[in-house]
Length: 244
Image (tube, rainbow, N blue to C red):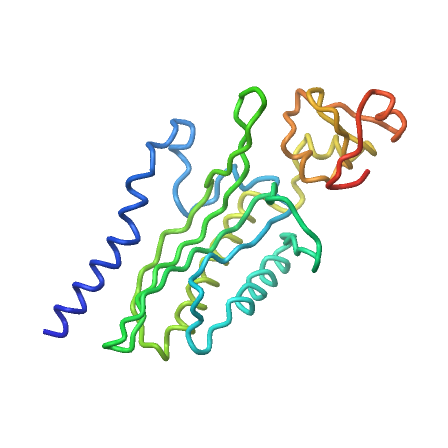
């Protein structure tokens, strides 16, 4: 009887997690069909800065600290050469425009058995720009790991969740390194770094070459400036993100 109840709880939990998603997912666009889930793809190429978010319940099972887990994720990314944006205390930021590594952790505690059922998935979301007037920015998932759903005792849950999250982080790092082999620099990026300032033909803002906004300028729209005055005289104003 206990086994039947346990299976029923698992089924209900799975339904709660996945049913809303099925109602919102649209068929993928043709150009994204070859990008297999959990594998390296061109969408990871050229990324040099990330924002990391763990989306989790308010509850912290005894022995699991979300901030400590996030610090370990950041450490692994930094060691792999992936810069992680860390907000400064007391500074207000707009919604991140750089790629965001999201770790989704859903949990359900089964009091009767002193167990947790949890579902974990890691994804990378990037900004895409819609060809509207004015242009609109929307975040889209461009890479995902396979979701993991397990059950564990309350005592073992912290270690289980930590292990799975770090494993999925390592999977992302591997995919990132495959898409960004060392010593290979995108042609557009190398051209940008030869100039002190850069802008888009369609924008009134100019940037430093390493600004996160520069990565989102189409190559055909790039314009370069040797000096700050040259950019200002061309009708451009400084970017508030990189402060050129």
